[in-house]
Length: 201
Image (cartoon, rainbow, N blue to C red; front, side):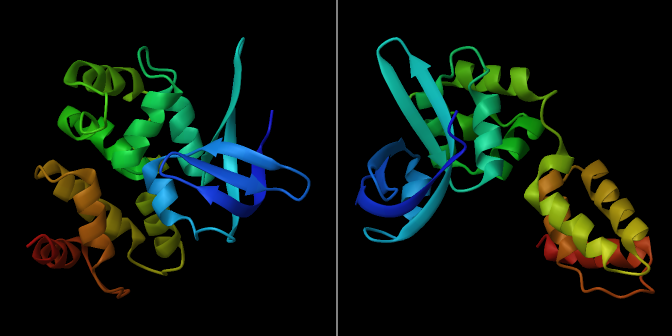
């Protein structure tokens, strides 16, 4: 219903922000992570919103990026995870961290969210593992963009990431390590892999 809310912050807590849009103030529920990233009272913000309409309430949930909003929408499709649970999870991890947790089956990381137990975290992984992919992560997109701007070694870098993953490293660690390797057109897979492994330690 409401795609985003833009204006000045007039009130801010760890769970809610009031945005002055010019003619009226809008209450928007937010995660503690979002609250910590906001500029403070008087600052200008734009929040992408999800509208929750029930018989006795009309609530907006706000996010700083479309990515966080899309992950939130996936979270609330999980049985037992409503909007409150979705915000709780995104308060302890960002969208990419959640994706990596789901892809690696790390229920313990998800269960750190207030009110989210181990069984619920395992259900999140089970329900979302087919709806989330490594290609959706910000770090993967950044790496692809970096490789697009290179003339020679994008294929070699992709192979290096695959090799590190095959060695047992998480996709997140593999991508970060390869991304940290300096860009040189004449690098082969073996060279990139050796340098990336150094970044692991």
